[in-house]
Image (cartoon, rainbow, N blue to C red; front, side, top):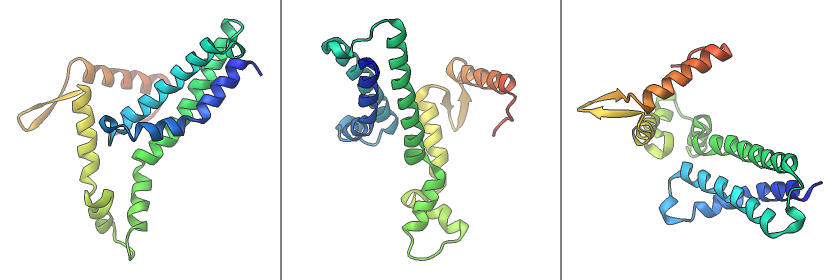
Length: 171
């Protein structure tokens, strides 16, 4: 196995540690997406450091470097899927609500106790906060308006993807 690929795989295996470390940085506390971004940047940074500092890790050409980076990126994507399920998985959130309950719950009780008592409204508030922060929507008094730049751009890309891939529309 080429040294650059071995370095990429070794660094990728340790991504949960980078995520754990990011969760301990005060400015990143409670900011899961930034924690994951930090861990991904750490992976790439460590790989670059390894190939620059250790001759055994230096790729022997463009193809080897590309394959190593693809392996690293693939592992980051796998962690992203797992992380997404753990940090934002609504199904898991419902299961945790049931686990933390001393007795079985009705659907209404689950909705009220979801996310430590924040309720299902938390999902809408969380999503809207993310879209506002990303500049996809803006507030106009008590209404939300799709922004012409990012918001409309995301919608256009979504529509193109739906048509291109033959998927069903959501929402």
